[in-house]
Length: 149
Length: 149
DNA sequence: CCTAATTCCTAGTTATTAACTCGGATTTCA
DNA sequence: TGAAATCCGAGTTAATAACTAGGAATTAGG
Image (tube, rainbow over all chains, first blue to last red; front, side):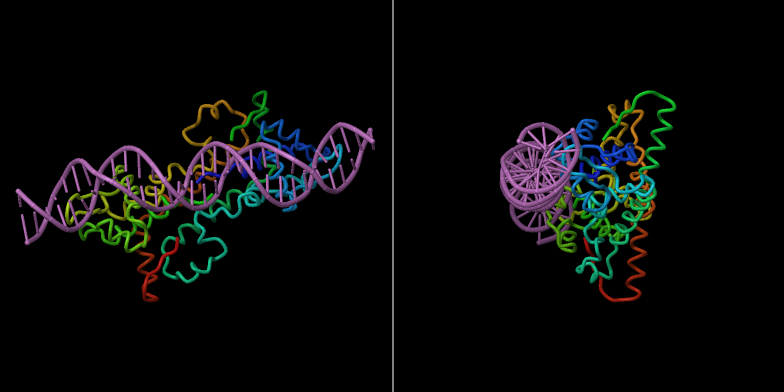
């Protein structure tokens, strides 16, 4: 029941871009360096984020990536669902699966639905701007910045 | 971010036993037949449930399994966490990992914590008895019983 | 006592997915 | 023109999930 690296790395990436928002683009190389992650792997992830319309890219030398809209308008849910797909604890609650639609008497499905709803309501309520604000508060108290997975 | 078959099958198993609670034991063979799942695989799962004190076993011919306490006293969370481990979206929120404890400035960890808390509060609020009651309501409206994953 | 039915235990095997790499095409600034 | 970057699709490797196998221990019933 762990989130894959797609969602976790992806969120870190987007947070990097959020901090830089309004100050031009950032290259994947720099993002990868800052977060100490594989550049070629991040490339795959950001490709999905771009196709989902969350980041803009500028090709060629001096190119890079930037958020497509303000950090306040991008939620953690936008990012994670783009990279992980729906956060359903069971396939049966994704898209009203046909075989599940038949199962009118299913007792476990309502449970998976409640779990999914509660996860979504958490991640949809947090924006990149919230994360920036939290970082600001942390920095008021101590120097340096660090991350975990 | 899907629950593995451990948690899903395990919950189904426990629900079988819950319906039978107070009327003797049920053999693994019957549970597996009812749910159309592999008996040898379920054996592994129920072994953990037994060690966690959620079910009692009676060995030998005519033996089987039964809930160790009333369905109202067993939550979905008890079952799922036993079989899946903590439902943490990231390893870093499990047991206050040492390298994470250092990371006082981590911005993503609070998010994983909120997700985990919200999942736990859902699954801890549902008991096997609730599921039985829900089934009863469903059966008031239609014949037959079915499940999905 | 013997046998069949059951739980118990450990170690495998297989299938699937996650995580990451590679090679090269395309674009663009300087 | 060349270096720096994004873009794209396919391939590889490592880890884990899902399930199997074989047999020991236990116990009710004949």
